[in-house]
Image (cartoon, rainbow, N blue to C red; front, side, top):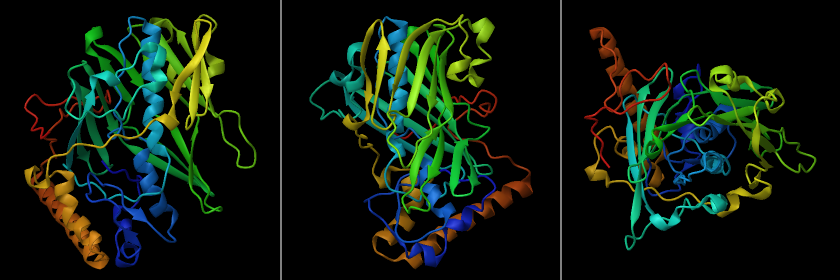
Length: 403
């Protein structure tokens, strides 16, 4: 779902003056589909679109190869983890604010031939969408806005043919400091949990990177990754620590990310890895691979005495989503919710679009007030309500999924 900043008025994106600066550049709008903003704008308006990119994974299709080598499986997960950051570059976009209960469904039909081997992780295709002539694997994406204050969405995406599933919570917080802004995950977000069901539910917990948005004075906003993230698999006893280097504007950095994959004792170190930087990895943890490079260009890995490309971002493209036609969507599906606004924007009727948007938001406030008066809590339609502690949402058995 679209992201927003905690403790910031969610109506600040509306208004005729700002609406007149907007122009739609895509035929359809889905779950706050990109709205490009031209001209001058404040920090909050500019940052909204970047926030949306820092956690979302909906548009990225990548099938993790299932090597019999546990280290290669960890490296494949790591390559996927880097690949999802493909969305973190590009123009600033300003999304709609998702309404409570809003849903979005899509899928990709990926050619089976796009599955990559452990020796060629870098060439794993996230763009090899099937034309229907060959065997395919379907990757499904399911998400629902489960909270409005704070703005939180739950998501699951899965490939049933491969027995791969990922789940997580989107919740973002931002901190403004002078001429930069730091964007990190909120308290509800514990990471993305990838499960390989064919490996006895082997699970990888992958935390999200922290982003620093700079370039306000230069008039060219840029997302830099900072601090440390980690991937851990308790079942295999393997973990990876990813450390981002702060980039300098006036010098050329040889690389902006480094990391290590290592074996660890879950009973001894399992609850400590979250706080580790590379220098904190104990000598008792044996290093099995090292990696480094530029997260937005190319990352190489050294393993078993040889070096190879782990991921080449320049070779990747985001695959197009396959979504049901508007007339086959439910009333709470994103494109159905926001089509009245998007259609006005496509016609250049920005003042009307702004009024329509306000009407949708006001209707939501009325519904919220009615629920409060009745003493009712919002109940998600797709997900079980017990996701808060683990950060790993589960779909209801009878969830009305419209893919």
